[in-house]
Length: 314
Image (cartoon, rainbow, N blue to C red; front, side):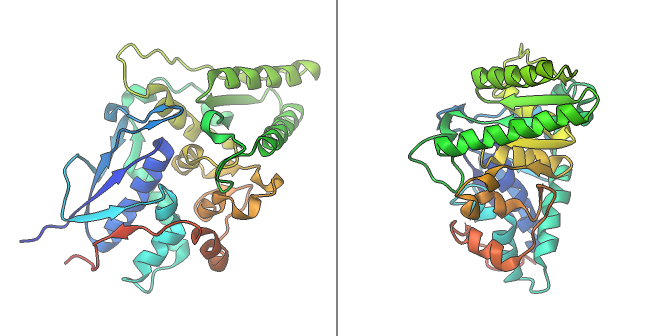
């Protein structure tokens, strides 16, 4: 007798992996399949994407390396399983489904199926819910030869950082001792931005607090800092993205209060930026967008998901 186990292989970095996991879970929930996921270990300029499963608490998901008869492939990690793509696929089985419903499912189910383990929880700083999270990316995200939908030309990157620091200055000037949490895959870049923020504070004779995190990893958990940073960002009251597009901080926002500040609007490539594929689920610059035709236009620059699932399982 045929069972309803379905598989997906998750690849790229933590953000891509978890966004595809959420989309896969939603697909399986609507079509009555059991979600089985494999976290692929692959190499990137910023490191090896091997994440220790002991750092997470996953619900209603089976982590496995087994393959099953039913499969889903996300050819463009995260983008092939974004809310609009998933909406179009599920609507072919359930015509009454709405784009808003699928978008809201990402918000609801992400928090339900992905939680930090106690290993991570005990390291999240106190009062982080009062902090502005700043997510910095550099390494492989800045190049003169890049995919402008999600990577940064050097001049764009400079604009984004300048605009982010303008917002930071406004926060420092307007609030009484504001709190910041800063995460980055590049420690030198992180220290440079911390110094620039401290200079803003000192030059204006204002008090700020930048939260420190105990990154001691005596048990050698793979990619411990990345996972801890993501869950720390998820606890912040708002996340400022120091890069045009980052699935890492999109996931953190979904797991938190769904608020992002994104500065791609100041670049010439804003109209094609993949941040738009997620702003029906995440509030980007205080706005959610449910314009079907606009989402179709953006999503059509990415490949569709591939699957042999062709019916609701009964």
